[in-house]
Length: 158
Image (tube, rainbow, N blue to C red; front, side):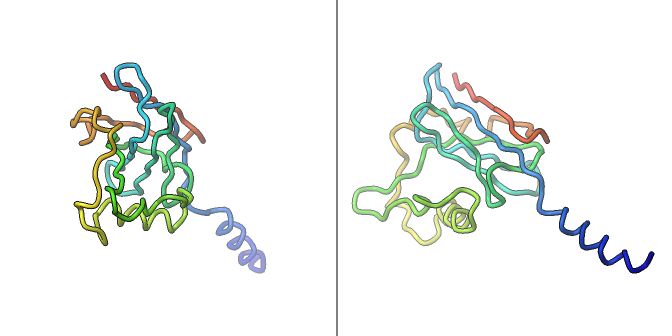
């Protein structure tokens, strides 16, 4: 009996992995029209990992986090913000070309969000984000991410 305990412990540890993630995607619209090039940020209500994505031309987003594609199930505050872009003559977006969920993406996101390593006057909101009302940028929206594998959460801003 006791000789099987180490094998059982190894099997149990191997199956534990990291936290379970739910892939979250959806569409952001403003007054019925898709909003391109805005950041959709999922901040956990409590401890946890922040997820983020940028909308494409059809307003679609797919959340990525430092853990991979998706976020752990739970309650989130959602912020929809203008994309920060480099002003003329400034360096390019530090997250460009990085895979969401990679350690490099997570580090670049933390640096960009905190303003570390760059003068603030080099960056400005992208024009497409100027239409997002301030209360949505500051976390008016809430989302409950379910433990379902994948979930669609559309945000309709009026």
